[in-house]
Amino acid sequence: MQSVTPFQAHEILSKKPTAILVDVREPDEVAEISVPDAKNIPLSTFSHRLNELAGYSDVFFLCQSGGRSARAAMFAESVGVKNIYNITGGIMSWEMAGLPVQQ
Image (tube, rainbow, N blue to C red):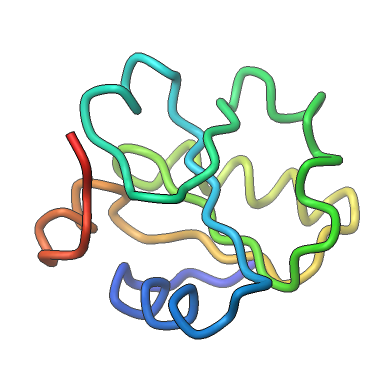
């Protein structure tokens, strides 16, 4: 697992159509603010939904501040998912960087 800044993640995601951004926050958190086109797979259901990551070249994980996404990334890595990235600072840093969000 690698850690990346929101800018680094946004750059790679915008250039690689085979990459995915996974928001591991709960649906009520995502309803308040989210990144457009991010796939919501809450950490609480993550282990049952790993199959949804199949076929993606790169997987970026995002949460509120970086803790839950790091846990999701470590778990995904432990079961063999490749090219995993944790976005440091979560959506808080993403928004502060001026990157696209929807409310």
